[in-house]
Amino acid sequence: MKSSSPPVVDNVADRLCGKISRRRALFVATGALAHLVAGCTPHVLTLARCPAVPDDFEPISEFEPRTVLRTGPRSGPVIVLLHELPGLSPANMGLARCLAGEGFSVHLPLMFGTRGQDNWLLGYFQSCARSSFECSKLSTNSPIVGWIRTVCRRVADQSDGPIAVIGMCLTGAFPLACLAETRVRGVILCQPTVPFALGGTPNDDQKVDLGMDPRDLDVAVRSDVPILAMRYTRDQKSPAERMQILRWTFGDRLATIEIDGEGHSTLAGDFDEGAFADAVSYLIVALRRGPGPRAMRLAKVGGEACEITPEGRWRVRR
Image 1 (cartoon, one colour):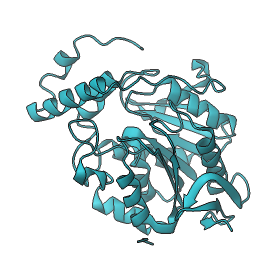
Image 2 (tube, one colour):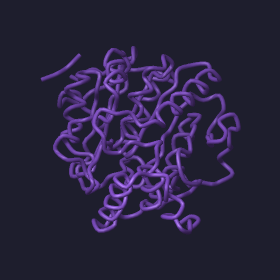
Image 3 (cartoon, rainbow, N blue to C red):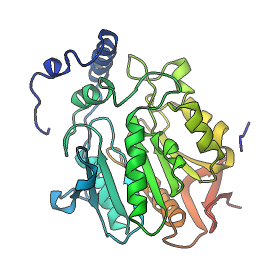
Image 4 (cartoon, helix red, strand yellow):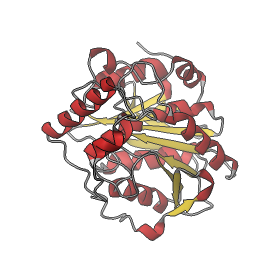
């Protein structure tokens, strides 16, 4: 319903030479420079209560040549956690450990770079410069979405219940494209940034675009899965207009969290306790780990405080 420092990689440029067009290379170089000039800070592990211990993550071999890591109880409800632009950073792995601590089995697809990578410039080249990600075009899926769907399908087949997908930053809106998989019953969109312009932030047209193929967006609209989306209020990389178009597109299926501040990474590098608590409450009900209703601390529907019902729907709290 609609409503009104890790390993240093030498010779990066040489490795990319011949693999990308001149126009795409210009986009990447300009955008990467903008990130640096703007003073983007690298992700710092703020989840001190959930340290990312390497031995806590096991590789799943069936997804070769790509890697998927898993952590948490094997019998727990399944979450597919999509990492951010710097890479599968310690902050992102810390978030996975926090979710595992809540009883979830968390799968982390490694989409580019290496485990523990926390480098904006390198991640920018590895994602936006290569054919797996489409960072600037309107109404276009990134090719990597097809592989992410495969991951969701396989992990769902191995589990006994529904699964959820969490996207962040570069992958913030990707969970919507996963709603084509019927076992996906929960999606969380954290600070979606794609598409964006040369300066590293969305331009006028991009602000109201969700970075999805219209056919996949139509599938997401026809789904009945409740959606949780979040951002910081002064985050220019994930602008207010994008949250508004999500509200217009999904109506009362969408609950939103807008945290006052200039942070970016709501659940990882700029971790917010209230947003995390709402995410966990939502996931517990959506994945049938516990009963509803559960009241949200920060999330709102139509500007009103809300709760997730036993049936897995958003409802304004009176």
